[in-house]
Length: 121
Image (cartoon, rainbow, N blue to C red; front, side, top):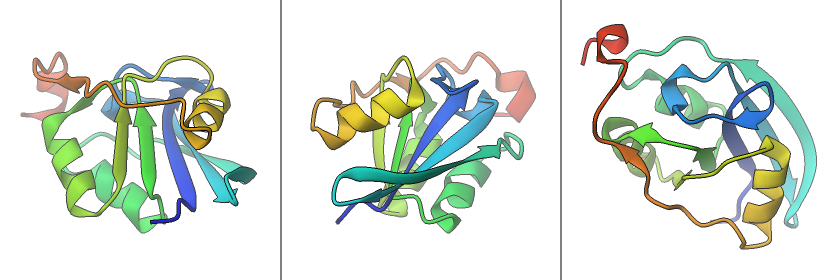
């Protein structure tokens, strides 16, 4: 699948450690492995199963985050969205590294959900 839109879960344009509780998602439009545009969407709220579908409906093909719960990973996989976990640093630099083939997922799935009271899991 040709990558057309990459989302980065971020806090102030920096890759966040926890996908569901990020401040915003930075969406990068891609053509010929180059960033052609970007937009920032505020996180509409963390609730189980919502954010992966929200981003899929925005045309996202790849999600980059520091960490993420297994349920979200499963939904992204069902929607044919590539999940890159373990990323750090500046959101744009993470996307550029991904486009160069220099950013691989560490598979950093959150098994111990520290915010379980917030999302009722």
